[in-house]
Length: 533
Image 1 (cartoon, rainbow, N blue to C red):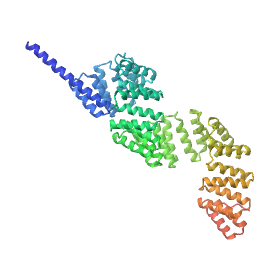
Image 2: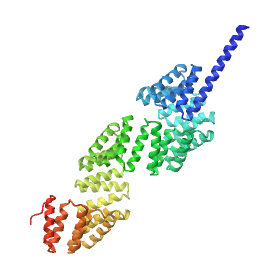
Image 3: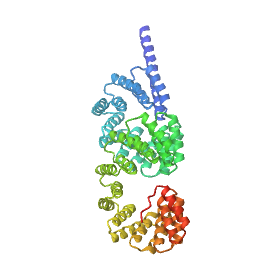
Image 4: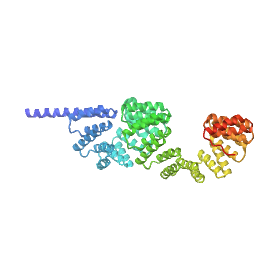
C-alpha cells in the first residue's frame, strides 16, 4: 500500500511538473506572439527546466533567439529539439533559416528538404511543411499547406499569417490583406498581423492605411522594430521624410543592428538632401551586412550627388561584383562616368543596363544623351527613337532628338521634335532655348528672341540664354539691349571670358571704346583667346 501511495505521489508530482512546463510554454508562446522575445526565452527556459524533453519549447526558444540575432543559440536549441523529436518539421525550418542567415546555404537547403518530406498530420505540421516549401520557393504548394491547416483548424492564426506572407510573395496583396484581416478577427491583439497587413497595403499604395495598421501594431507592442520600419517606409512614400526618419530612429534604438532601418533612413535623408548623413547610414548598413548590393548602390548615389563621382563609381563597382544583373547599378555608374565626361565608359554602362532591361526607356535615353555629348548625333537619334517607341511621352527624348537633328541639319525634324517637347512640358526652359538657337541658326532673329524670352521667364538664372538672346539682338542691331543681356550673362557667370569679349564687340560698335577695351582685357585675363582680325 505504501509503495502504491509513493507511486501515486510521484505521478502527481510529475503531472504538476508537466502542467507547470505547459503553463510556462503557453506563457512563452504568448510573449513570442507579442514580439517580446526576451520574455519568451525566459518562459521557454522555465518550461525546459520543468520538462527537459519538451522539443517544442526548445524550438520556440530557438526561434526567439534567432529574432534576437543569437544565431548560435538558435541552432543549438533547434538541434536539441530535433534530437528529442527527429520528425519535428518546425525545428528543421528554424535551423534552416538560421543557417541561411549564417551563409551556410547547403545546410539550410538540406534542413528545408527534410522538413518538406515530413508527412504532416496536425495544423502545425502543415504550417511547418508550408514554411519549408516557402523557403524552397515552392509558393503554390506552401499556400496549399497553409490552406489545409486552416481547413483542419479555422482559428489557426499562424496559418492565416503565413498564407498572407506567401500571397505577398505572389504579389497577391488583396488576398494577403484578407488573410491578415482574418487573423486579426481571431486575435485583435496580434501585432504581427497588423504589421503584415500594413506591409500589404503599402504595396497597393494605400500608405495611409499602412500607417494606421503599423501604428496599431506598435500600440500593441511598442518595441516592434519591424513595425516602425514599415511605418517609416509608408511615410517616406507620402514624402513625410522627417516623420519617416523618426520611425527609423525608433527601429534602430530597439535594434541597433537593424541594417534595413539604416538603409531606409539613409534614403530618407537623401530625399531631404542631407547627403553626408545619408552616406553615414548606408555605411552603417554595409558594416552590418557587407554582402548587400543595394546598400553600395544607395551610398554611391549619395556620393554622386555630392559630386564625389570617383568614390561613387567605386561603390557601384562593388555593388556590381555582388549583383552583376542589377541594371540600375550600371545606369547609375553611367551617370557618374557621364559627369566625369567619360562618355565612352558611360555608353558602355548604359549598354550593359539595357542588355539586362532592354525595355527601359530611361536607360536608352541616357545612352542617347551620352552619344549626343560625344558628337555621335546619328547614334543619339537612333537611341532617342528607341526610347520614344517605348515611351511616346518622353519629353526629354523629343528635346534632345530635336537638338541632335539641328546638328545633322534636319531643321524641319528639329522644329517638330522641339514643338512636341514643348507640348508635353510648356514649363521646361530648355525646349524654348533650343528652339531659339534653331531660329537663330536660320536667321529668324525676332522669333529666336521670343523663344529666349519664354526660356528666361521660366529660368532667369541661366547665363547661356541671356548670351544667345544678346547675339540675336546684336544681329538685329539692337546694340543697347544686347549689351544689357551680355551684362546679365556676366552677372550670372562672371568668369566666362567670352561674355566680356562679346560685350566688348558691341561696345565697340556703339563707340564705347574705353568700356570695350576694359572688357577685352578682362576676357584675356580670364583666359579667353581673342580671335585675330
